[in-house]
Image (cartoon, rainbow, N blue to C red):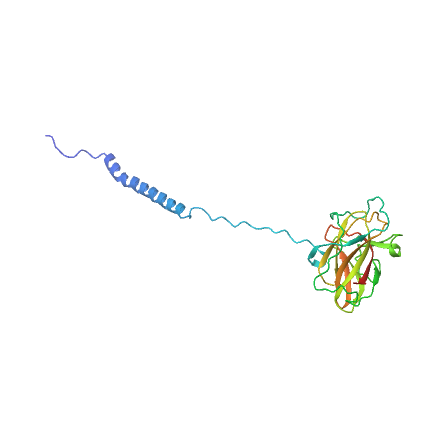
Length: 246
């Protein structure tokens, strides 16, 4: 007797039927992930925002006493006699070659000789009353006023000339006597005014004196006139200054 019925169960067909939802579910997840990724890319969410580029500003140059410098001040240079050939001596210079011209007048000031009531006065660079850092030295120079000059001015060190008195605020003419075989620049100011960068053409030798004339403004009462330079830069050797009314 033959019995008719469903074939015997082997397990293969059921595995095929039950496994199909797994493949479909995985495919749906992949499609959803692709759609989400596409939407993020289209809306800009798929890439990080670029970081702002940092801006770099070079540091301001160092100046004596932490003050800012003014523009290069033209000055009148005087050379006594014919300049001899140059020789090498003293600290190395880094200043550009200068050009000499007459100093400009500041607006709103009077050129009157009695503007400040300041009498003409000469102050030696090596004077004991001046404020001079220990790194600066006094050297013997037969051509200098008093036979001596101060070397080592600059490199973030300041020589202060003291004893300048004005009855009223105003401008004065300052003549700086110096020695140098090289073209240099130096920062000068009166009192606590702005630093002025002044050009000093080579005087011809370390034992030959030349002068530069400029204009500074004094305040009423006691004033100092300072000379110095930034780190790594040197002023010429200084002989004296002469302060005179305009």
